[in-house]
Length: 211
Ligand SMILES: [Zn+2]
Image 1 (tube, rainbow, N blue to C red):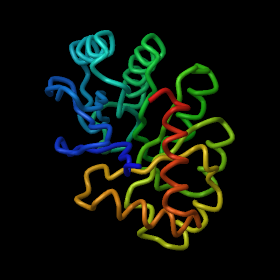
Image 2: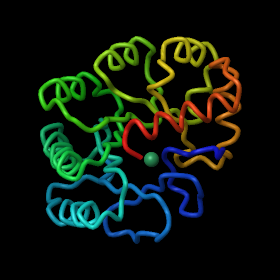
Image 3: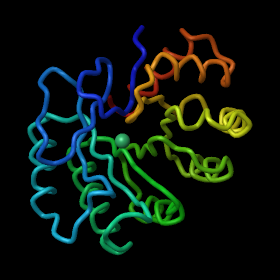
């Protein structure tokens, strides 16, 4: 069974969801997601939304995002919110899961999920915040994907892997050069799960969110 990489910016990856930004090219035969990254948000985003919706409609992508919230975004929270809602609508219309980038604004995200009550899975990618936040969001039905960053603080990684439910997480390389296998090895240690079990759990989780 493959080491599935839930989110990567490396266009050469196999067994991975390769993320592209609007106006980048789809690579045929690969699993792709497309969304506006909060670092690239701007006031006028209509063309980007049309681009993403076209990809969703023509089934060229299997997930929407990454999209979300970040204090370093150039647009204010209100505009970040509007952009997020546009992605949410595409995700629900075309039955595609939503991959989320979130720094700090977890309370905003939580309220949105409560109010919008999505049918599609919402996955917070490269989650590296407090275990209490994870626990709270997990109760609300969120999924999580972990990258190398979570293992930089081993105490925190221990608590996170004691808190996360097996059916709620994925592993990813994101923009790191690290081999996804390394991330699986670390997760299997911290989660205290045999590698094959870990892979099969993640493959079940993928099916569960429709991938
Ligand atoms: Zn990313």
